[in-house]
Amino acid sequence: MNENPTYGLVVAGVGGQGAVTIAQLILGAAWMDGDHVLQSEVHGMSQRGGEVSAHIVFSKDPVMSPTIEQGDADFLLGLEPLETLRHLIYLKKDAHFITSITTIKNMENYPASENILSLLKSIDGVKMIDSDQIAKEIHFSHGANMTLLGYASNYLPVNGEVWDKVIRERFASKGEKIVDKNLLAFNTGKKLINNENFVYQ
Image (cartoon, rainbow, N blue to C red; front, side, top):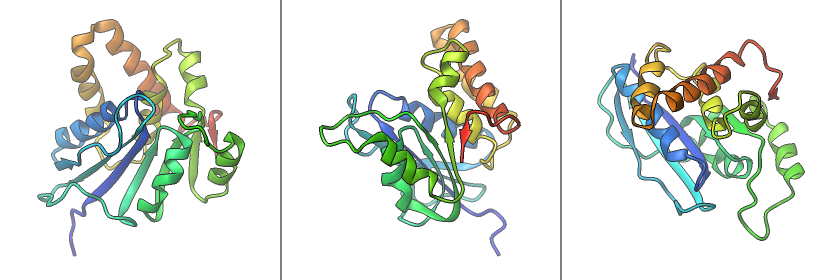
């Protein structure tokens, strides 16, 4: 029996949301925790509004491929509800998935938001986060995705102590104020596990 199973994670969103940054933070945290890590190239159109997704695969054993096949992912982090629905096909049975509830209408025939959210609510195990509202409450308009990542970190097989260092290193070039804001957003999301007023399931 393999004591170090491979863990597959999908990040899904649209261009301009910061999906690439979130994927890189997860990759960095897994690597810093001692894992072998591979990330696929971002799929779709990376300009603002286009679909963006990334696959991250990590294990204590060497990883052979960065690509996750349909039905093989252990976790889905959806930054946009419709993109979350599109990428559910990658999940294993009983896998975890977390999504923002804020829709981004990036196409002419975008479905009604209430229909998307209703579909998501009907799926067992979903965690739906009002990350935009949390970002407003902590006065950091760009903090929504970091709150999602913070909440997701409770479920990921990564040592919790590495996140602080990874976030500090990633945003150091932007100055101490931005580092502190991102840490606040991350830690606010992480603490939702104990106070899920912003979690719909």
